[in-house]
Amino acid sequence: MEQERFRRVNNDWYNGNLVDPSEVDPGVYNRAVHPGAASWFKAAAVGMIERVEGYLAILDAHGVRWVRLDSDAPGKILYEDSNQVVAVQHAGAEIL
Figure (cartoon, rainbow, N blue to C red):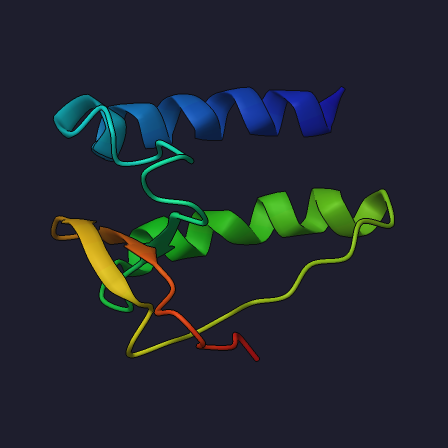
């Protein structure tokens, strides 16, 4: 299946080209400590973001709704590198 091939190839690419924040800080996604922690690509990570379009096409093909969120203030930064941040939304903040 073409979609599965796309997923495997691109997951492998991301694994080879993107740091896994949980390997740097094993607690970064700990739900008890950091509930709602989420990864965001930085706007400058164009090559990372461009590859997402193929995943979105797969979601569309299966009727799965998605929303793109852009933010200059994603919340409290727990992890950051040149391509991404992991953040927890500030208390009382609402994602639009």
